[in-house]
Each structure stands twice: as structure tokens, then as C-alpha cells.
Image 1 (tube, rainbow, N blue to C red):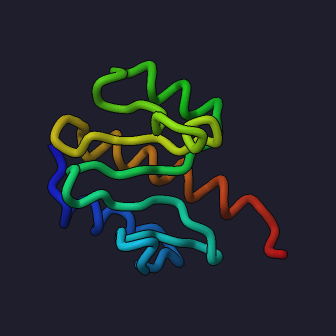
Image 2 (cartoon, rainbow, N blue to C red):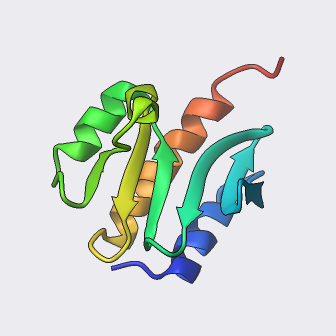
Length: 107
């Protein structure tokens, strides 16, 4: 289990990551691109993963990690249920999203 503050700390521990607002949700950006949003009321975090990684993480337990159930899920947006996910798994997801953005060149 991960609480909201721990999820925030893990996200902000990634180099160059800053917190901001995204339509009323705390968001975490690197290189001006969102890697995650924190859904405080729902006690979950959305992490933007490459689709192949989304499939891998979701295979762990579809009740804990799963694609966002709309068009954004098909773009890699993945929910991590904080009440059930381990800190290590959340960190791995955030690290994967961070690496994907850092591997892209700035425009």
C-alpha cells in the first residue's frame, strides 16, 4: 500500500520532475511533459506508460494496475491503485514513464 504523500515523494524523487496542476489534479512533469497525475479522491495514480510496458504492468494484477478505461488507456495512461500497489511497483512504473520522456528529444 502507498499513501498519497508517499506517491508524491516517489514521483518527485525522479530527477527534473516538478509538480503542477492538470485540470485540478496534481501532475508530475519532466521536460514539460506529464508522466503522472495523482487522483487524490480515488486514491490512485495515473502513469503514462509505453503500451508494451502498460501490458506488462497490467499483467501483474488487473485489479491493481490497469489501462484507464477510455481512449487515454489506449495511449498508455495506466491506473495504479495506491491501496493495493507496492511502493516498489509504483516506483518502477514512474521510472519507466520518466525514462520514456527522457529518451525523447526536446522540441
